[in-house]
Image (tube, rainbow, N blue to C red; front, side, top):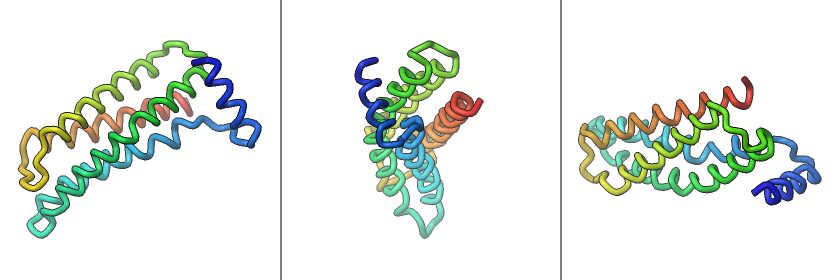
Length: 144
């Protein structure tokens, strides 16, 4: 992984990109998770029931963005922290794993055509909380 990291960051430096790549990638899963929460809860308003399906689709798109986001995070971790285990890195890995599991659970178990205020809806709230935790810990890592 170290050689690949150096090749990628070497290329990025040559083209003038000196920033970490992970933060830009996080917008896909984090944005979709937050959007899913908003759409799910808005779908309980009588004229907005169709938004439950939009929230469900946000989860699917968010899941598709997890792999490249994790890969970029691993590259940045190798490049910036030389792969050292720090509490915030461990926290981010745990939160990312939990978020992925909850998202997969929702995709498998949710019936967006018949959204109810139930444990699946609670999972949407849990995904939001996990996303906030990931964003906060990432911000602490990046900006201290």
